[in-house]
Length: 102
Image 1 (tube, rainbow, N blue to C red):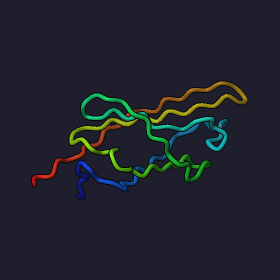
Image 2 (cartoon, rainbow, N blue to C red):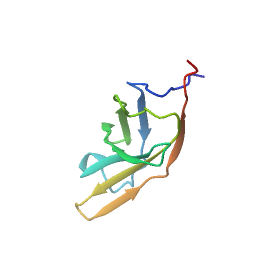
Image 3 (cartoon, rainbow, N blue to C red):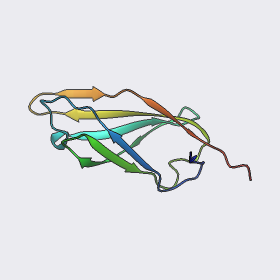
Protein backbone atom coordinates (compact mmCIF):
# COMPACT_ATOMS: atom_id res chain seq x y z
CA UNK A 1 0.00 0.00 0.00
CA UNK A 2 1.35 3.41 -0.97
CA UNK A 3 1.21 6.16 1.63
CA UNK A 4 0.84 9.86 0.91
CA UNK A 5 3.10 12.17 2.87
CA UNK A 6 2.85 15.82 3.89
CA UNK A 7 4.12 18.10 1.14
CA UNK A 8 3.05 15.77 -1.68
CA UNK A 9 2.13 17.52 -4.93
CA UNK A 10 0.20 15.99 -7.83
CA UNK A 11 -1.85 13.52 -5.79
CA UNK A 12 -4.92 12.59 -7.85
CA UNK A 13 -8.13 12.70 -5.80
CA UNK A 14 -10.74 11.02 -7.98
CA UNK A 15 -14.28 10.78 -6.66
CA UNK A 16 -17.43 9.37 -8.27
CA UNK A 17 -20.38 11.43 -7.07
CA UNK A 18 -23.86 9.89 -6.82
CA UNK A 19 -26.14 12.33 -8.62
CA UNK A 20 -29.96 12.04 -8.69
CA UNK A 21 -31.15 10.81 -12.09
CA UNK A 22 -33.11 13.99 -12.80
CA UNK A 23 -29.99 16.15 -12.46
CA UNK A 24 -26.96 16.42 -14.73
CA UNK A 25 -23.54 17.14 -13.25
CA UNK A 26 -22.64 19.03 -16.45
CA UNK A 27 -25.40 21.54 -15.61
CA UNK A 28 -24.24 22.15 -12.02
CA UNK A 29 -23.45 25.74 -11.13
CA UNK A 30 -20.65 24.64 -8.83
CA UNK A 31 -18.88 21.46 -7.80
CA UNK A 32 -16.47 21.71 -4.89
CA UNK A 33 -14.74 19.67 -2.25
CA UNK A 34 -14.81 21.20 1.21
CA UNK A 35 -11.69 19.96 2.95
CA UNK A 36 -10.97 20.11 6.67
CA UNK A 37 -7.24 20.04 7.31
CA UNK A 38 -5.71 18.30 10.34
CA UNK A 39 -5.49 21.61 12.26
CA UNK A 40 -9.25 22.22 11.77
CA UNK A 41 -8.85 24.83 9.03
CA UNK A 42 -11.36 24.49 6.18
CA UNK A 43 -10.45 25.08 2.53
CA UNK A 44 -12.21 24.47 -0.78
CA UNK A 45 -10.75 22.47 -3.65
CA UNK A 46 -12.39 22.81 -7.08
CA UNK A 47 -12.35 19.51 -8.99
CA UNK A 48 -12.61 18.98 -12.71
CA UNK A 49 -15.63 17.06 -13.99
CA UNK A 50 -14.16 14.07 -15.81
CA UNK A 51 -17.40 12.39 -16.92
CA UNK A 52 -20.64 14.16 -16.06
CA UNK A 53 -22.87 11.17 -16.82
CA UNK A 54 -21.11 8.96 -14.27
CA UNK A 55 -20.33 11.68 -11.71
CA UNK A 56 -16.57 11.24 -12.02
CA UNK A 57 -14.55 14.18 -10.69
CA UNK A 58 -10.82 14.76 -10.29
CA UNK A 59 -8.73 17.11 -8.21
CA UNK A 60 -4.92 17.13 -8.47
CA UNK A 61 -3.23 18.54 -5.40
CA UNK A 62 -1.00 21.58 -5.76
CA UNK A 63 1.74 23.02 -3.56
CA UNK A 64 0.33 23.77 -0.12
CA UNK A 65 -2.73 21.48 -0.35
CA UNK A 66 -1.22 18.65 1.70
CA UNK A 67 1.27 20.53 3.90
CA UNK A 68 0.05 19.04 7.18
CA UNK A 69 0.43 15.49 8.43
CA UNK A 70 -2.70 14.00 9.94
CA UNK A 71 -6.32 13.24 9.08
CA UNK A 72 -8.01 15.18 6.25
CA UNK A 73 -11.80 15.18 5.80
CA UNK A 74 -13.26 15.83 2.34
CA UNK A 75 -16.93 16.53 1.60
CA UNK A 76 -18.33 17.07 -1.92
CA UNK A 77 -20.71 20.03 -2.36
CA UNK A 78 -22.77 20.47 -5.58
CA UNK A 79 -25.16 23.30 -6.45
CA UNK A 80 -27.72 23.72 -9.23
CA UNK A 81 -30.03 26.71 -9.79
CA UNK A 82 -31.88 25.39 -12.82
CA UNK A 83 -34.45 23.95 -13.35
CA UNK A 84 -34.79 24.34 -9.56
CA UNK A 85 -32.46 25.16 -6.70
CA UNK A 86 -30.71 22.04 -5.42
CA UNK A 87 -27.86 21.93 -2.90
CA UNK A 88 -26.32 18.47 -2.41
CA UNK A 89 -23.86 17.74 0.36
CA UNK A 90 -22.09 14.42 -0.01
CA UNK A 91 -20.99 12.02 2.68
CA UNK A 92 -17.58 13.11 4.03
CA UNK A 93 -14.68 10.72 3.98
CA UNK A 94 -11.34 10.73 5.75
CA UNK A 95 -7.85 10.15 4.43
CA UNK A 96 -4.56 10.18 6.33
CA UNK A 97 -1.47 12.09 5.26
CA UNK A 98 1.70 10.77 6.84
CA UNK A 99 4.75 12.52 8.19
CA UNK A 100 8.17 11.63 6.79
CA UNK A 101 10.64 10.36 9.36
CA UNK A 102 13.58 12.40 8.05
